Amino acid sequence: MNMNGVLWSDTSKEPEVSFETSPKRSEYDLAIVGGGLCGLSIALESSRRGLSVILLETGKIGNGASGRNGGIVVPQFPGAIRPSDVRRLLGKKKGDQLCELVGGGPKFMFDQIGKYQIQCDAEQNGWVQPAHSAKSEARIRGVFEDWKEFGQPVEWLDRDATFAKIGAPDYLGGWWCQSGGTVNPLALCRGLARAAVSHGLDIVEYAHVSHVLQNANSTEIQWNDKQINARKVVIATNGYADDLFPSLKKTIVPVRLFHTFTKPLTAAQRGEVLPTRVCFTDIRKSGGFCRYSPDGRILSGGLVYKIGDERANGVQHSIERLRQLFPQLGTPEIDYYWEGYCALSATWLPSISVLSKDVYSLAGFSTRGVSISQNLGRLFAEYLVDDRPIEEMPVEVGRPEAFPLRSLKTVLGGYAFPIFKAADRLGLT
Ligand SMILES: Cc1cc2nc3c(=O)[nH]c(=O)nc-3n(C[C@H](O)[C@H](O)[C@H](O)COP(=O)(O)OP(=O)(O)OC[C@H]3O[C@@H](n4cnc5c(N)ncnc54)[C@H](O)[C@@H]3O)c2cc1C
Image (cartoon, rainbow, N blue to C red; front, top):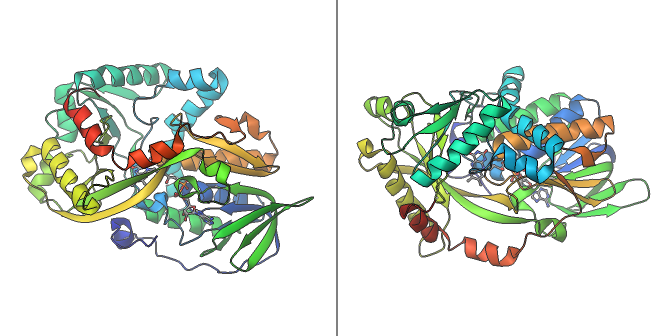
């Protein structure tokens, strides 16, 4: 899992720091497995509030999905999931709380970046969910109406207004929310780690946790030839979950995604493509999304498909998708390509698994983890510190539940992309 070829690694203004490879103590209040946005956010909040905390990461901080994602900060659930769907699934109280966390999460996140002066090229120019087809227009209008009723500062854009904001001529309309934006996600991880260490967090890198064993009063955590004990443990391995807890691994389908960035656009092109530097994500099954990097490149990507040369497939898809979205660009040249795993849950929403007494996991952030993994992580830490019942957290909480047909879906996922593209072309999405 090295970060070679990831633009965020080449452009991070937060330096890469080498952390300890051994723990400083033998006992902690809390041990966190996984150094992505979720684990780091739990670590930051719990250290800030006085717990003794250790975070164990199998590689370097941020080398899972958190350092490889698109860095698009989205004040919405995945796809066309509506606040009313969430209330139906979780009940009104939890549903409203989760909507609050998703809708209000970006504000907290950007404020925190400011508070700790994290150098992650944060830009809060808003996020648009545009309609690529008549069917998607009806679906996203429902999403927009729900958020409006919920009191979010959202605005419907007609076709011209959508074009004026994002410069892609084929969208039929869309809605936008000012609180969305973009970050360099790897730099954000490094900055969160720096902030948490300033509050006393111990980080151990290259610590591949292999055993979590329950004792009478604490839990023993083992990696390589080392071990510590902790009162409570959180597994924050999301799409990178391995056999540490086979039951946890079965709750999600690991989805392999690729991202690409073009060469920097010219000044004239930048006046036409995303002229307001907004970012956007449509609900095509084959993914229509875009943002700028600070050095003027634009993003594309999708699901890795395992037919022939996977990298060449991805690059070709990105070129086609960008030509389709922004015909004014001609044929863009791709400079960067990389891959990562996100964790798809059966509901597309995150949940908390209770693995054993005082051992929990937060997972299933699906394709929308940048903001919610941090905000849910922070809230989880508040619950731990205040000794509040975890069952009251605003997500499903319980024993790990297997994703139906997980193995089949994991295999089929590698071949689904051409089918998704065809469904989009036929206007079925
Ligand atoms: C290519 C891609 C693009 C995406 N784009 C976006 C986007 O633009 N916007 C958005 O909102 N979301 C996006 N997502 C989703 C988002 O990145 C994730 O939901 C989020 O980063 C999850 O964070 P996490 O901390 O839960 O998991 P991760 O960041 O994956 O962290 C898990 C960590 O656990 C570690 N680990 C695993 N097993 C062990 C072990 N046994 N011992 C120690 N450590 C272990 C891994 O090394 C890893 O660092 C994208 C995902 C991908 C893959």
